[in-house]
Image (cartoon, rainbow, N blue to C red; front, side, top):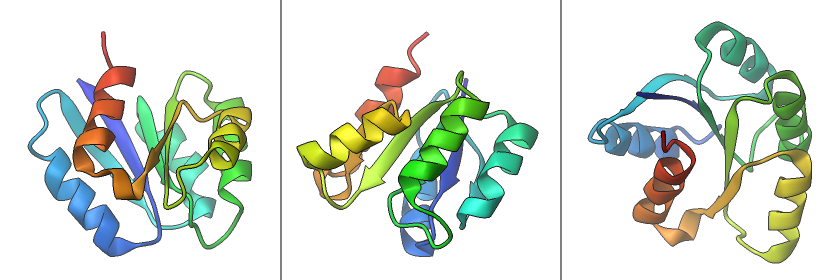
Length: 121
């Protein structure tokens, strides 16, 4: 069973992902945050296997947040959701410590495939 934490300031995106993840066997959404300041404390408390973070967050640069997560909880995989799926963003995400970048325009199946890939036993 893979445990996920969803971080994003857009409640519509979080709700859509929450509804879709409810149908995925072996995946449990353990929590949600809508700002960068809560992410580390929620990771510490909930111990997710995967953190899904939206590139657009209100409090901090998402790459700085990813770096903080990666340094504090290196065992946790990080999926960055980005409106811009290009090489520049991909390299920035990788350097920050993200496991994978998924473009928002790629569709839910690509998003689910990324989760399945990094949560394989």
